[in-house]
Length: 167
Picture (tube, one colour):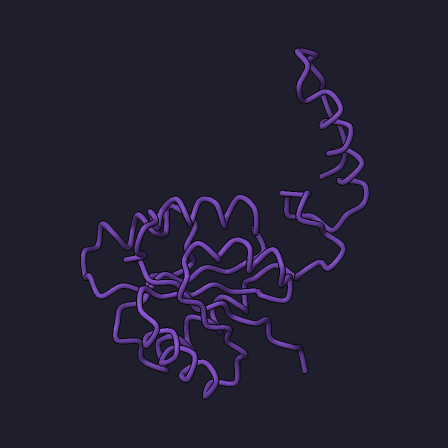
């Protein structure tokens, strides 16, 4: 049996993460509840076993779309599910454009979240434990790492380079 990644659950009030965590536990997942939105990125960095993020669109003190951009940029292997009570299709479309895999409406229903997670896991790229946080590209191929290292050596210069190789 394949081990399911842990799910980080973040919401604007302490009660909602516990409720969402209860749903995820009943579905057989291992959730980690978090009420402090400033701790999203540090928690993801400290726990590479977290494979999914479920968070409320109405995050206090933070722009949720900036959070999406940042998580997508630095934790590209994490699947993102955004939740919200709003039924505004603009918000859900904007969340998807900023990197969310799905937009789920509150109150969360076990069938809806279970279906969304199963769908994501059926299409998710395999996780590569060898990839470190300094590598912001989805790859497990050491050849690609060498190409990226070569590009990084000249990244701050004005030298034009052409990288050739098999795709």
